[in-house]
Image (cartoon, rainbow over all chains, first blue to last red; front, side, top):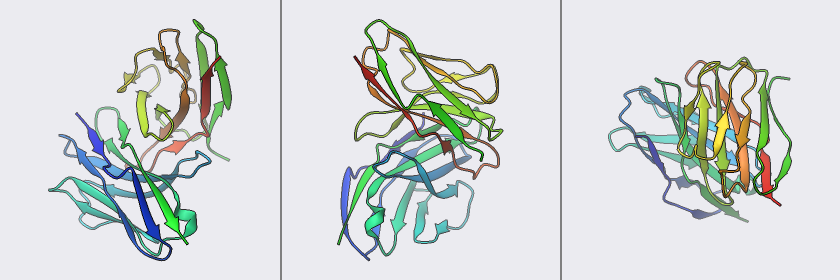
Length: 115
Length: 113
C-alpha cells in the first residue's frame, strides 16, 4: 500500500534563511512520481515541484529544490531564502504511474516565516 | 481559460439528506479525484477515476458515491451514511505526461445544519 509521512506538523524559519520540510514515502510500485504543493490560508493548492522515481538528478524550481533519496524513500523539500509569503501548509504527494494514477497526500507541514 | 470548477462554494446538509458536489473540468484530463480535507489536516482520497465509466475507491470511500458518465464531470454525492461530513472537499484532475501535477478546483465547504 502507498503511504506518505510528513513528521513535522509545524516549522518556523527566519526570513531569508533556508528550510527543509521532510517527506518519506512507502510504495511497492517501481514507477511513481513525487509532488510538493503549497496551500495558503485561502485554500488553493499550488504546485511547486515534481520528482520522478527514475530521475537521476534532484529537481529544482527557482527557490525550491527536492532532496530525493530513493533508497531511503525520502523526498524532502528545501526552500531557500524564505520569504514571508512562504508561510503556508506544504503537502507532499505521491502518484503511482500504473493502475489508475492513484495519488495520495501526506498530513502536511505548516511553515511559519518570521520577519 | 482551462480549469476545474467546483460548485457550490458552500453547502449545508440536513440530517439524513444526500447532497451532491459538482466538479467539471475543461482540461481534457482523463483522471479525476475527490479529496476530503479536515481543518489543519492533509488531503485524504475519497474516490478517483482514470477513465469514463470507471472509478476506484480511495482510502475513505465509505458514505460517499461518485459517477463518471462524461470525461468532463465527476460529481461526488455525500450520502446520509456519512455521519461526519463537515469538511473541505477538493476535486482535482490530471493528464499526461507523468510529470504534470494535479489541477485543483477551489473547493466546496460542507457543513451540517
